[in-house]
Image 1 (cartoon, rainbow, N blue to C red):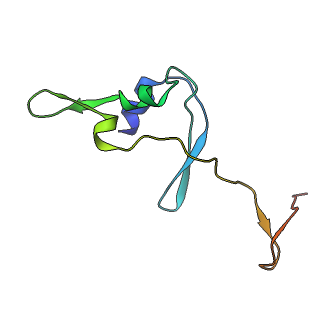
Image 2: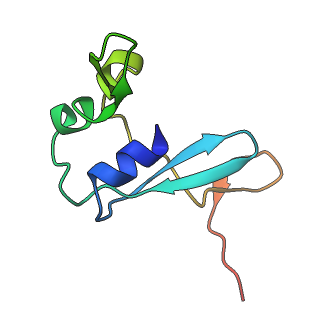
Length: 84
């Protein structure tokens, strides 16, 4: 499935998918512009030769951006953090 998405969109974009203990950056600024573009990505065919599209196996939607780089101090709330 991931290869089908890559093949349908040779350019890039940005978000994060967490799988197991790893995070993967997803880029999708290229040819795929709308959710329907993603829904129509062909993944293969069934035994009768009918195309299987991403929308047939996944729920495609936008969601809120994940907060990144939040720092907590002793469980008391967010604080400003930095690296030197």
